[in-house]
Image (cartoon, rainbow, N blue to C red):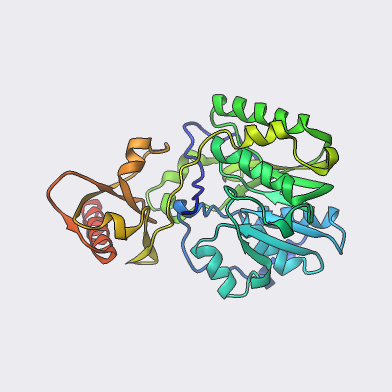
Length: 349
């Protein structure tokens, strides 16, 4: 079972932030963007804006030599624009994979040889350890994952190189304190760390939030940036070429929740349902009820345990003790979800 990395639902507002400069934006339209599949939070499919992705590619070009190698850990949008605009620098996209990435591969937006399925909860493949001059990482904003993403980034990096990390935007003070403490632990195990650059970045609004206006609480700044934050680039030299044992223990200290990516069910209109758990286990006579999830918060553990499906329209299917309705297949789940959403839209009209 692979891990899924949903980005945090913050309980506050993001700090204002502008957009980064795009030195190659004039060439962007030649590349085109063809994801094909709407983003889904269970896929951790938050996509950088075109402007943000190209500014990151510019940063890579300014640092990495033509014969160098770049690893993109969990940031397929940047890998797509690197393939379109920066063909002279070798790169590899490392990601656990989701329908959006598969669409990019099928469309040739990311060459198949440049993609390696990888879950940060597992060890870095031996042939990739210490193989990259620069690593760009976009970790989800959960404490149990941030440290793992940082750890794997260091393991991918050569004895020295550049590490570009998307920052947590300080939605919650207690989490920011914990992240800062983990960062100090990591830096303390390094031989040398120098901050070189900070870019303002943001994301495109995903369909599952846009469908009910949930993005409003996360749009800030004069240019209406969604989930605005920074990507900071550090020049790093590892002590002895390895990773400090103290940081290793701290990075993997918190247990992670592992979800199956489940099966995608088409519910029409370009939207789909993702099953959180394996249908063969949960769909035998399970009673479920649908409702619209409209809270700007992360579901609690009890809620997560009850959720068996989530649609790109933000409809949640939850297990219930009610006698009806019963579902026996993913098709039944899709029909239940579709019917509920049609009724919701009818009432709204």
